[in-house]
Length: 481
Ligand code: ADP
Ligand code: GLC
Image (tube, rainbow, N blue to C red):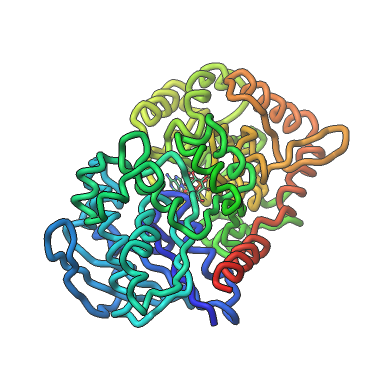
């Protein structure tokens, strides 16, 4: 039995801010249990729901030399859905109202602590992974610490590491002297062939340099990040590591996201009866959100972090014009204030057409995926994107920009060939986006049978983890040998 440890800063059902949590929560369940023992280690955040904290049991604790102090490290455990979870407990670092805070230096100190604590905890738990699968910059120092000190110890000899880039934009950067002092890594680690990039210490770079393999979450993003536009300054390094870099597209949990059994939605439906049943969710949502109740109105949904990444400047630019159309727009999201206020403004201005819900809600997100006719995601860049996969699963037609995972998972409608699962446009341009939305409106209103066939194909597309989990397994096998 090969042993794999996932190390990450968030994971469903314990804590979630975005798609990373969905992946960390769903992928381990889909790895073949006959050959792999996959466990997951996360921070224990004070802001986790009490019912989740109640599932955790104290295992042990120790004190770790970190940032010139002896720091408390608690280890807790829990079993959920057949997966063994571990948690690193430290009230100083993990006490906030949210997992991530605004103080960049503290974030670095916190996740460097987590990375070192993960490795230090393993001998005490008695779990020696053959491979540690790290995710994003927060765990970038795991491969570094592993090579720098832990592999000198028998317990860790031969332990491999992989890092998956879910978002290259976030790298964990600060000046090298400070990071060196906090982490206790030797000075010669802070050179451009190791942790340094553009005069900063860069934790993600450390992970990419020292991991045995690097993956990202779609084929297109794996190519894009080797270019200057998408490379966030690390494109040179990624080109240099391209032999060890591959894209494996994300899946979603087909049980949690299933319109036939979803407990959050008003009317369950499936690929056969959606023509009659899906619309009941739209009516219910119109009532719930105070929109005009009209089941014929085309409803477009957005569920997203409200950041530049997701293309909200295009939407902001076109909102007035878009709101002249015969549509309704339902938004669920939190993030940058300018976008939160932009949607609040249009909700006020076009109150029967626009519903802005500026908060986080699992339940409302499911209701939107189920109720809407289309889902808008005009991202500037998108490593994979899960929202469009959830939309496809619920027969809600995605309208996306052709970038990263959006390009790999949404097949554009072709009216001549009768193919496609959604609508897409190539350039990051507001008019192109609006023209594409209007093309979708036209099919929705004037060619309903065609529209329903798009829905048929969307619901038939398979983005469960089956195929991609096998690719991870192959990679684990290849690395562990
Ligand atoms: P990213 O990870 O970049 O935020 P993804 O599309 O990969 O984008 O994943 C986003 C996940 O977060 C989806 O599961 C989406 O439904 C969820 N989500 C985003 N914002 C909210 C919100 N305000 N309320 C509930 N779920 C949200
Ligand atoms: C990141 C990306 C998103 C991806 C998710 C899970 O948050 O922004 O595109 O789907 O990670 O891999």
